[in-house]
Amino acid sequence: MEERTLSYLRGRFGDHYRRAEIALPPAANEREWGFIPWTEGPGETMVRHRSLLDLGSIGDFLGRKKPRHVYFSAGRYDDPSISTMSKKGWRSSDLVFDLDADHLPSVTLGEDTYAEMLAKCKDALLRLLDFLEDDFGFEDMTVVFSGGRGYHVHVRDESIRGLERDARREVVDYVRGIGLDFDELVDEQTVAGTAGRSSPATKRTLTTEGGWSARAHRHIMSEVDTLLSMEESAALERLQAYDGIGQGKANAALTAARNNYDELAAGNIDVHAAFYQIAQVLVHETVADENAPIDEPVTTDTNRLIRLPGSLHGGSGLEVRRIDRDDIDTFDPLVDAVPETFRGHEIAVDVTDGGLVELDGDSFTVAGGIQSVPEHVGVFLMARGRAEKAQE
Image (cartoon, rainbow, N blue to C red; front, side):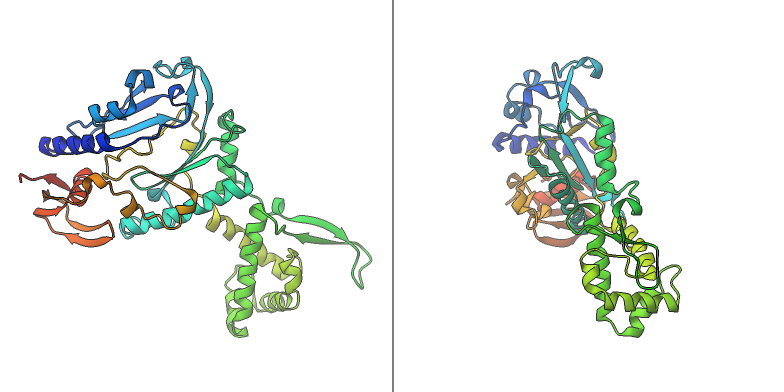
């Protein structure tokens, strides 16, 4: 990045911070603070192990330093400014989740646009919130657009702040479906023998009330509804696509689904051996489709630094935005996270990597060379290394 570009971005970030109102996290004086300044060259240098006493007023600090990135710690400490982690005196930590579009199995890098990546990341966010709210019952949560490629969720319920790494890893394993065993989801009950059988039978069911078992049940019923809505020949062909399901088993499974729909809806998946075999496959599909692909090290790290809501992301020029829970569905990061500071102006940039830009409700292709563009577009291109500041 050229000095003219650095100087411009540093100055305009400072302009943003002088007009911004930054809300501090709870117990802000007990947290470690860090930032990355604008420096020449490809590398970045983190300045960390600071306390609020070191920084002073956060507004004055941001307006004066004009940092490229700003962070605070999930952890709370006796002395957050000590440079040795073991001597800080750890008290507790928020439970933080990070979803990054680059790491999602559903994202195809090089094919999905930035907007498509962020849309898929929001889908993953909603799945994560389903786990946190419905399965764990967490209430004190803050949802944040990272300003870059995804979302953060900060859980601050008092009951979890004292958890150490191993306990946090169990939370990670649950929301990612790691180690989830089919037999653990199924409730087995011994029932009376059926006609022609003297020995007791086993009834295997999935709960319909919550957790992974309910998710698996919903997925199975969705497949049942699909099969029953199809022509019989098409349904049988669909069933035979499952490993180990031939024509005979497919016929038996379809008949069992048709004749035992109410039992299936109540959770009984043991209506026929062939159907039970298919149900096992569908449960594995549930885990693949409905897990929350969070960045594991972020959640297990009690000392993690995370982006400050209200700050700017130095790799995009977008704002790290706190999102009200009721607004998540309608939140558009490429519109709602564009800083007002960068709206309403045109600037000249020398585009070195042209192509698609999707911002503020517009989608257009930027050509290479010197171009006059809306400032928020120019800042985005410069922050991402796709342009340099041109002389006006």
